[in-house]
Length: 322
Image 1 (spheres, rainbow, N blue to C red):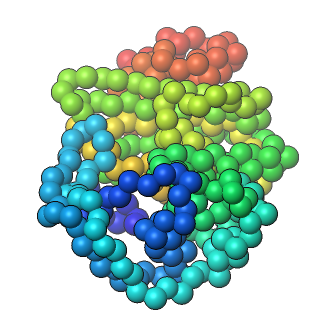
Image 2 (cartoon, one colour):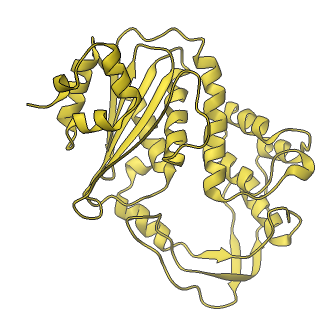
Image 3 (cartoon, one colour):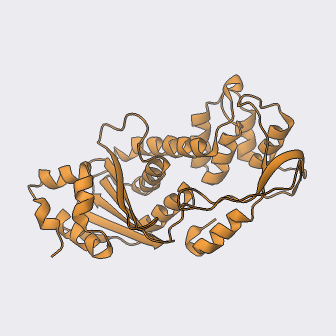
């Protein structure tokens, strides 16, 4: 789904009207009839029809500012699907029991298989080495695929020539504004997101970063860190290398819609014609005109951006709006 062509209300409506079936299975129980049908659906080359019977009428819904909207759900009693024609590339990966899951993800991505199709197949244990295959929660499978693709792209980006000026890419969608600042250095990356009056009068900023040597451990800001990193590296892989500072503001009315929303918005930002600046001060001064939060609050919260400013012998005061 292209979030830039749908309103927030459209997306929320789709999610709240989607009935969810549930069944408890072990993560290694891939020969379960229910899981086999989910694999069939995930490997399909096109949409297919399905029919479900529940132990009771699906009920309930969940909608808040804290998590993705969910529609009614219930335990599944019976589940049937139409005959399925598998996608050829996904089928090859499924039957290759000697191919590592990470290699399968990269092969499929290089052949242009949509990210959502790769992630779904990964989540239901349809790829990987024989007995090592297992089920993964959707959130984990998305982040694993994002980081696998991103890390592989970074290997190539490190050989690209470094950008010679400062570039700013921007995009607004669904009560969010994104500014991506590319700086003329070797790869380093910081993600910062601010939530402004989403739940009340709060102004919260979260951030995480990595230097050229890479990141150790899981990001404290979660999946958005990896999905944004992958989206930017897709662009840089086209013959550029740069340091990357991503700044995001979410405003009143924002509702979490999944990390796909971040990935697609950043992709759209990188597809816009960038604004070019000769120095960081003028680049950040421009970004500050688009933000509701003073830019110095981002700088104070940051690690990498603050260090870059200091290394250029520029004081924080020079970024404060007058």
